[in-house]
Length: 115
Image (cartoon, rainbow, N blue to C red):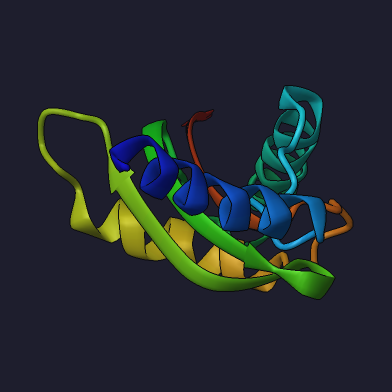
């Protein structure tokens, strides 16, 4: 009797996946790297134009929606000083990079080193 109940639970889950309502599309590492490269190039250009130096490593957490727009941005300086201004400046510049050309949609985390 127990086995039958377990099977009943698996059938709807399999049907949902087969119907196209399964987990979201998995992105290749290449698509994430293209997104990362696009952000590095854009922020570096804005940093030079504005004369706002961004030096150091940053941990970046993004949620990218359709059309290359950001739903969420979080930037943390990976230095010992925990530079708050760095995170604010980098976040503002990343926002100015939208819409992105990258086709990536969803949450992503990565580290960038600004020079």
